[in-house]
Image (tube, rainbow, N blue to C red; front, side):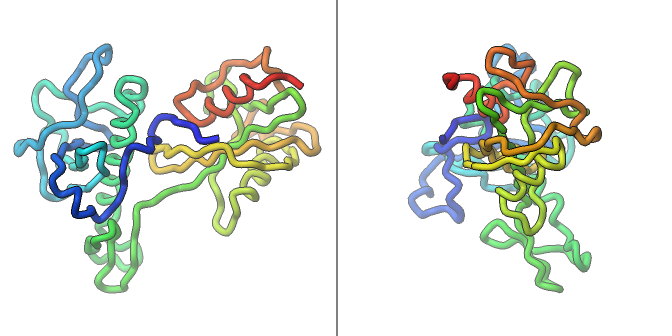
Length: 281
């Protein structure tokens, strides 16, 4: 059930270190500051340009990360030292502002660029002994004092569409607007399998047991560094009992009575759209 969705694109080559045949490829740059990217368009009715030629006035040699090859172009992420380094006529945009505004391949590069710069900035000092770290060739960092190895953080989270015959389980988080519902999601705990995380999250949030768990698709979600792993599961037993903290309402919905749900920007929207497109039994 492979799906194409924002921040995920098979055309972006992450091979690292660079193969020798990449050496002749031209380079382009994404400039990042405080989780935002530099764009040359202040009007989002136009497609903002976020891939730039190297500009000496913008470049800082302190934070440069290879973000991947897009076609025959090498993409680098450059961390700006301050907001003052953004040139006139350009602006800083959040990744969310770029969804639907730029090519999805470029959006995937941007999501990766922001995460790589964030990793570099937050891993300069060893979390165990406080020593300045050294950069390794394979993207990691190493503490020269205690030998701690550090790699870019990825936080796996499950997201699951639960079905009961011709109905789907939808829930409303305390963080949602009043009319918005979605499916169950949560971070994977240390020592858990993905399947265990699915069962635990559904039980914790709505008090239901599920079975027949199967994989749907995954989506990198750079807010800030999640990997959303999507599943479909069948209802097994139980009555809905929301936890009242993370989930404040939940219920079963037929295809023809779905409330407001997320769009296909996220994997939750793709899962719900998959359910809505199924024929009733």
